[in-house]
Length: 242
Image (cartoon, rainbow, N blue to C red; front, side):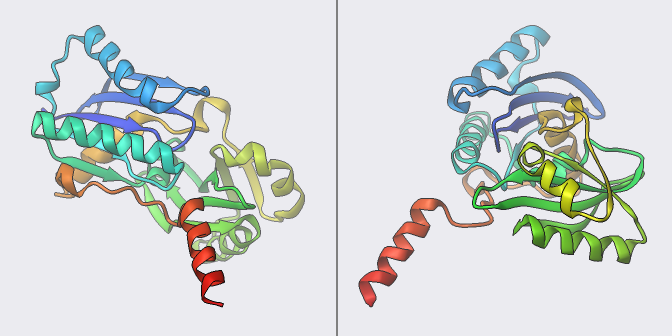
């Protein structure tokens, strides 16, 4: 039996979980404004104490690899790297949005996780999960209006007339979605609308069985776009060359 540790820190949610094959042994999730550097390892320590599982029993560490908050992703990656090196375990880079889409199951709708990326953009992807997760449009950073166009095109292609939205982008864009999106749509309820480490671990388990593991040294978050500091540096370089 394989035990996988899942770490989720791509947004405000901090979550850790341990699964054993298809059983979630423990999961600790919080969703409040406290830095992940303060929460992740104490949460892991708590579930280890509660379950009596030794970290030496783990087969791998699955970590939410992005997109998401630059700081949150770095903290998650650093935590996973440190544990991976200390325990000599492989890491599994799990796309954040793919794992979020697992919250919705046995539905014929298109599943659309949206994370607020600021500047009127969202991190998003488009999925189906009737019996198995299918990626229809891979993770991307786009404006909400661009997402509408891609969603309508995907709906026509897949012959699907309804979408389900989830994620921290919903409170930001819900009114706009209701006003502008002509496609039938719903919003996931509160217990299904945020990231979960058990999803990271479960998807990580599938990826590990498919041989999709990396070393701790190779773990790098997928930010999808440049940080604000990098953008400002590029602007400064451009201005300096004029």
